[in-house]
Image: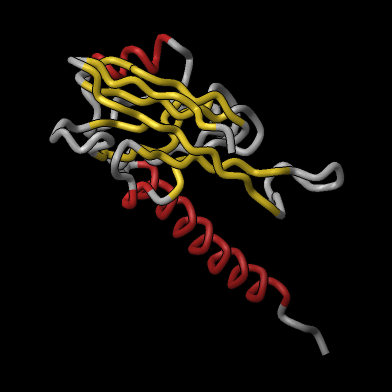
Length: 171
């Protein structure tokens, strides 16, 4: 008895054709999405100024060859002036390269914390000029992504005349 191979092949080609068409159509919809979702590892990553930040702050960050990873909008000193604590990386991914915290007030950087994957710890609890920065403590056998412990560093900021001054307080 002969088995009808030709109708089976035609059926498979039609089914596969619809699958490929739907796959490509879904990709086209995804590529037409206007939201600029990029990761720091994306080869086509183009830094766009975050609407929270002024053009002057964005220009400073761009000129320094940094990419914004996170933005914390707070009143560090309690004087009613908005401060931007911007976590930036200089290249690659946030867990592979140094990550810094830049402190901005009135479009000017007034403090920079250079760290190893530094981030602002509990930004919603910042008051009285006390900013806590958290960094991983990596053991020799740990991957860059997966530190088992962290250290915290206190940065004390005070308003002096028209300037905000900060200093690292040794723990």
